[in-house]
Image 1 (cartoon, rainbow, N blue to C red):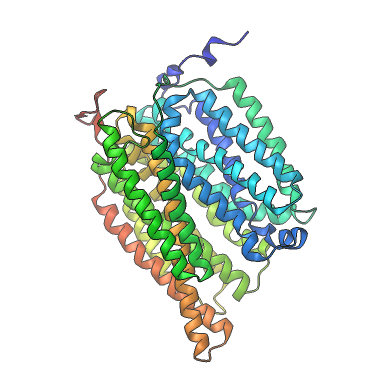
Image 2 (cartoon, rainbow, N blue to C red):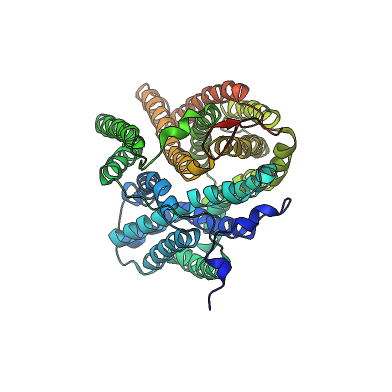
Length: 488
């Protein structure tokens, strides 16, 4: 006989201060697994090229399609998470992820493997906003920084561990082993979660506007796809796709504004009426662009210029990722005590210093210096992301939490795509220009990387400027969405 607590709102979780609710621990664990899987494929590209008889550009579609699917699906999750109970959303997310993983293990062709990755991405797209929305619903405001710090640990450590773990696994077998290792772990987490997970909040029935679904998919998906095309150097086609995507997003926005008057928007843009939330979105997006750009450039530098193996590269950048994740809970506790500004401003300055340091990379820069700069970047981002996520979502009325987390996750994908496209385009254009003047391939590529790092350093100035205007605490709202005085 099912337990009653599994089918009723889990409001009791909010009663215990100082402890992380079980529902959040379960969702963090599941999120860790799905995000780990997102980066675990990086080192498998050479194996895939040989096993499936494909070129590198085709193989990269496994990453592009994943990001493209996330960008297209996440805008729908705000409506979806209001429509279904927590357990249903969890079952859909993990069910899709398990199905995609199982298909990937046995995929005989690249087409089926690509389809499996798309299915995995659909599950991941639901899991991220589900975690953020549930956290805001069940965790008291006094504990949100600490708990968000634990979320940061999962979100940041998983990508850092992915390349290194895949490098080790690939020493023992084919690329299929990557999925075979993940499947039983994800299956166990799903089984345990479905036994223990409580429903949080009450689902609200609402119809879905399919025109909004189509324009969101075309707009955000097209924008991410167009940005990814810049990496291949086809700038005219890429620009056309990006402009088309932006046009579709414009139509989507106008549609949502019209639907808000009827109370049934797919993505409720009233979240943007909060100044704190909007500032947090801008800061997060620019920081993500700079971060993703550097995370793309550093492995390219280490492998193409310094000739490290993928495993060695993963091990060199792992300390920074681990430091970022392990500092998450500490940053969260400091946020709960002192507010966001004392963390975000120093973090933004540290990010600027780190990216400025990367602009000085040479053919012989000591590895310890590279490791130190990367660790400084990751620690600085730890000081930024936990307070910014907490402040941003905390400034949104509770009835709009699912929409706020959906917008936040969507912009993360767009910022990641834009940051990647920006640095690759700048690096390629600069290196090609130098090669045309007679420079060696190695020196031209290195100079292109330095210029791309300069772009990241410039973006970090925007992060510093935005951090200065971010408040220490978020404004509060009553049940009708009206601002109320802060308790702090």
